[in-house]
Image (cartoon, rainbow, N blue to C red; front, side, top):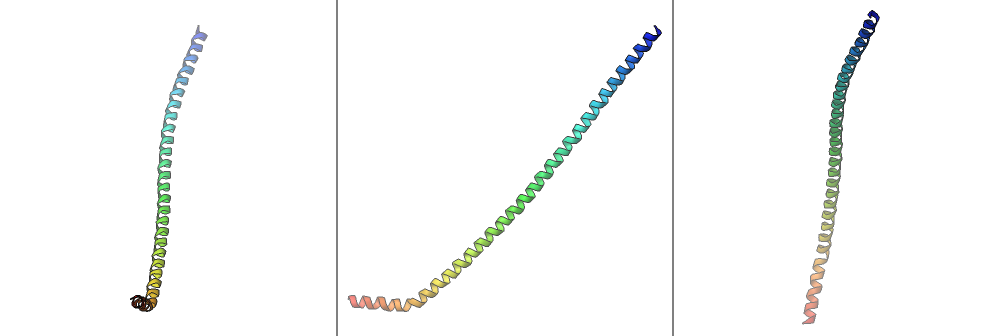
Length: 107
């Protein structure tokens, strides 16, 4: 029986070590899972921040480009307006004379 007790004790020891190892493994798995989830969350936050920063830079660049286009359009419109005014002033007096002459000739 002594050998039987020895074998039974060894089986109990192995069983206890297996339970202990399983418990430690589960605990380590949970800790690793927690660390991984935290790391994933940090990466997601960084990705969102980086995306927002990039998006903000792109928006600012597009706004600056649009402002430049608007400025160019305004300058061109101002130049065209000045050309029209100049041309009007050039033909104003002759046009008035011509109209007056035509009105006088009709009457």
